[in-house]
Length: 434
Ligand SMILES: Cc1ncc(COP(=O)(O)O)c(C=O)c1O
Image (cartoon, protein in one colour):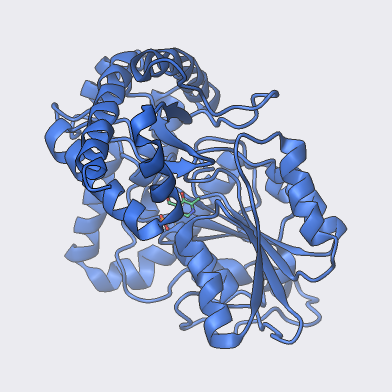
């Protein structure tokens, strides 16, 4: 087996440009060449005889991919659907619920992904569905996160709680299993945003704890080409959930009293059939799930092996980044080490005294921060080709790094130097105007 690191990168990810330092897998994912090759063959098959592909092959292939995914992740495939991305899945769920604006409220947290919060805001603006936000200021112990949520949930006002399994910025894990149980205690529906989950954490808890809904991108950490995400739907909601956009399957419902084996099978496949064709898009990437699983198990040696490498690399990379960022740099962690998933870690970038007033301004004014951030991002991407995203959170700049099977410690030496130099340069340009 080829060792993870640069040799692995050369062999299995040769498309990553040689002069690029890929330390941001988390945003969009990178796909192994063998899986991309498979996608290309499928795109050609779609084109060669599209009637045969879409009418005859795609429906069976869709189920085949679901079965492979379910069996690999330990989830009943009948509770899974494939959609383009996590944002679409969150929209499909939130826009399928017949909200009663007189009483239904949604809860999410301050570190939720903006596109998903905006879907809730849309429901408020257009349909007067109210919402509330749990403030999370990291670092936090899991018990603190649970306590913050419970303070709100205990009021009994909420119909649904949307929470991340692994947040985007900062890139931290939430105690999602405990949050499911907490919501169930207060009879609140759960919508888990696991955009970063598949390929980083075990998902077999889904059939055990039975949250209401969960989504995970497969194009981020699972090595399926863009755009592909899974949507888990608790069997009790298979009638309620609609595709996004609402399409052919609208009106499909389970039979009220199934008696024959085929009626029972029909009911079990309501979700599968609903999502198997929504509108014409290429299915090539979705039909690469089996190929991605093959790569993960045969070439990478399975989930445990991947995670082991990521955690080992992360441990070394944290020290390297801290050394480069200088005195005062910290890793975002709590006393039980539960904040970091295998592939993401956050390090604070210490800021000189003379920039502190500017930092406070940037934290207060989100549009000012966006301008600052965009300027830094552009420089890192174009000039240094070493990009890691950052935010200002709890009065510190937190830089998020990704660790994957094609990385080595040297990537973080270059990456940390790039972020540090660019942030300092742009702060210096701005401080002149203060
Ligand atoms: C927590 C979280 N939710 C949702 C998304 C949205 O993913 P996508 O753009 O693939 O829909 C992301 C993307 O990074 C994310 O980090």
